[in-house]
Image (cartoon, rainbow, N blue to C red; front, top):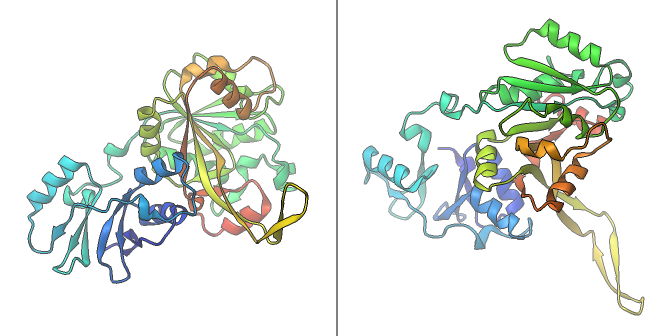
Length: 351
């Protein structure tokens, strides 16, 4: 039994996001201290709560399903389990003993004997990697190499990023280049990968979104966009489904981050006198990770030959009453390797 799927009802939303990521499934089973079944919680429940304004440090008590479907040990058949999975579209179903203590967890893939790496999880959408920047935060390495070619164990950063997409069926990779572009092109020529690589030349720096203008007419389906210094460990198929079902024109992936101010902060009253001191307050935010899904029609919004950031694009989209979605993920799912402290921290974690 995957005990990572069993979590206490006392955890908060941020901890639940992390547990979903660690558990490798899309749902959790809520239990008390004796592993007695209390309910179930899906990643969809979590995202809806976060997007409706529920604070990340709030308990999951009010959002989990307290009337879950479950089976009693030795009192169900595999056929019954299959019918329930198909009817209810569950990912997991708990199995309990006579005291309602969880003794087993049925997984959809196990019941139907599916392999998670099969073609059912293939998603052949293009990926665009923004790799034209100078990478000043990683100097002095980037004085010699373009940032995407900084090594992480036996692969470069950009190979780690691309591998996350090729395992789900992505075959078309677009890379925007400017700084040390010839080195980057030579690397891929030598690598000779089993996916198609197309380079988008920036003749001058165009910001974090300006070079996307060159994709007009080259992509006619939704596509991923990624910064060249991030690795996101999520279900990309679920991200795409979220984007499609929400009817979004652009969806950004946001990480749940907690910041603690290591001082007592002063709160003043209307007269300027001290009313309260908050000792080491904690703040929770959804932080833009630099991973997106975008519909090709949005490319028309990007001006030609103009320095233009992704934040400018998002602002223009919203100004035109287009829909921008936010897909929350755990802070553990996001690795930012664009600065030395983070690079050193995760160097030996990446395989």
